[in-house]
Image: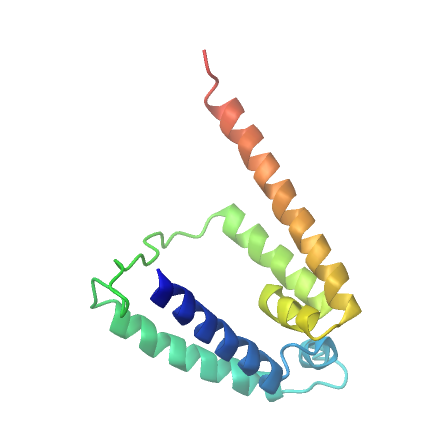
Length: 147
């Protein structure tokens, strides 16, 4: 268990530092990247391209493994279908990112840096997560009534 906590801390620290260095924890930089019709800042496209390249190689390598480096079984996603929940979830994520300039990871990093806007975003994000859980529980109860 100790090696898992140390590993999670190191990976989280590297991820947070990467978000700060790349500018993804700065909502103004993110909004400038998303402003295609105005003062567009394409620098985050390089960051995202690099992340996609590294992620693609990682997925190719992990696809052949049955266990992680820490000995845990690999749990890769198996679903490949595109349904309306995925589409609407992606749309909601994009709208939120475009309005606030934050997505969850960078918002937590910005919150740690004392950014007040990040606090508002994180509270709204947690409220949205709670609402989703409540809706899912209601859906599960109505889909499979006990009786």
